Image 1 (cartoon, helix red, strand yellow):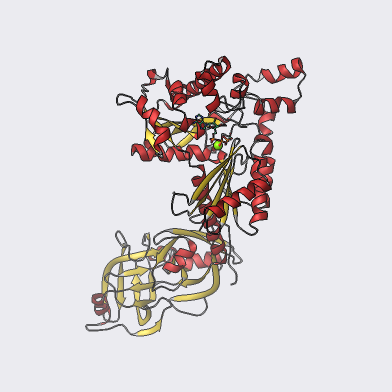
Image 2 (cartoon, helix red, strand yellow):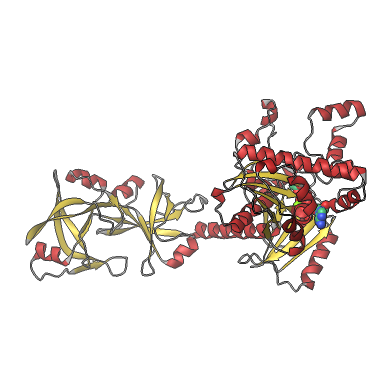
Length: 590
Ligand SMILES: Nc1ncnc2c1ncn2[C@@H]1O[C@H](COP(=O)(O)OP(=O)(O)O)[C@@H](O)[C@H]1O
Ligand SMILES: CC(=O)OP(=O)(O)O
Ligand SMILES: [Mg+2]
């Protein structure tokens, strides 16, 4: 499979082609200051052709804002597009561009699946103390809350830092600084984003290329009244005419600002100081939020490429135990390394530079969404026959001889649906403390241990507490007396059998499940029943069949067809939920 990842940032359009089996892109490119329009897509297609790329199977899009409902990557359909569109006021620089990308991709490659991967998703589990604004309830009801952005990048930082330091994510408190044209800091506490500097929109937090970052909320009303600005003008100024651009008086590009600052340009110097101070302040705050910090990581166009920027930010953080190694810091940019440690040996905090891999995260997430969709579709079509298993016993050869006479061999009455098993002509009586069950069928062939399977109702009638067990799992099973025409036998092995599904490894692959796992199935009988914790028994010699006991069948209103140990019910069960908690589905016929 080949996935085209599109990442429309505020300063760049980045794209790449990936085989999701490998993190190494087949090609990757950046177009600076793009409009996402037909010309940009012509350029993308031209570059794909030039790089000799194979045909694309799916397109993954970075979408900055998923709004209140899209908190994980999703297949693009009309609903997804509507949600992205509705969240556009919360990400006016990004969501409309992403939507344009989605529509252009649909025109270029009609019929290809498209997936939206959201910046906000990584922060969806932020605690309330970080996601709430202290504003009136009516505002919060209207959707005013903190979301956070750059989630693909912060997620990659988590993985890269954990890999580079060879420490589990759960062991690490990471402060991830994504410094591009847009910029944010994220507190990643043991694998989870617990706070991040961007909020409801991508305006909050750091000083960015053209965005203000944190601002006294009173400023907006003040400039409205004093300068006569309306909301659209204020918003435009905060998104497009603030930040480094406003402070430097030069522009938004950090490369140029740094060059001019070196030449002594006062505005450029001020801009760099305010910018670095803001990042430093957030690092201090997030160290406090996590009760310490094990690693500070830099990523994004500026965070990766500017050693001076990293130095400026880390100056003054010595009190946290941060010490930068100047040589390592200087050499990262040209090194081509994906990730590197930049701290001095005596530093108590690791400092890392991480090359942003947003396009790879998009490709990976896209592949995962497509796999889930495929599995859901396969599950929709997947139904399984249901058989009702009446009480029966499995015996050792020694038990057969004790009950039916020396040298006795079980005689086949009828083969069962699971290959190799048969209902025997022989029956036994099962005797408990309080009652007995007569003519209980023996199932052959003989086994290494005696096993007596009864329903819960029958166990009660016997007066014995029988554990709920999978066949073969007999430790702690109850004791019971068996009688046959030639003798009596006291044995352990009495269980209530756990409901289970026999399936082949090909069935398991289609369902996306594994041996010993569990699924949930629905029986659309008149008593409509969902069965949870259905055990899976994968065996290539098996025949696909759900086995229920008589209590379960009665509770579901299922009837067996005919007589015998294992009766086909005529009902087909469907998977509902289970590993991926996919759609509820139900029984077709009964
Ligand atoms: N060598 C460099 N030194 C300083 N800043 C750089 C360097 N290379 C790129 N940048 C900064 O990175 C920004 C782009 O960041 P990037 O993360 O690639 O874009 P976007 O925010 O659009 O995703 C540019 O605006 C530029 O200021
Ligand atoms: C959300 C955001 O600011 O993204 P970018 O940095 O790509 O513009
Ligand atoms: Mg970006």
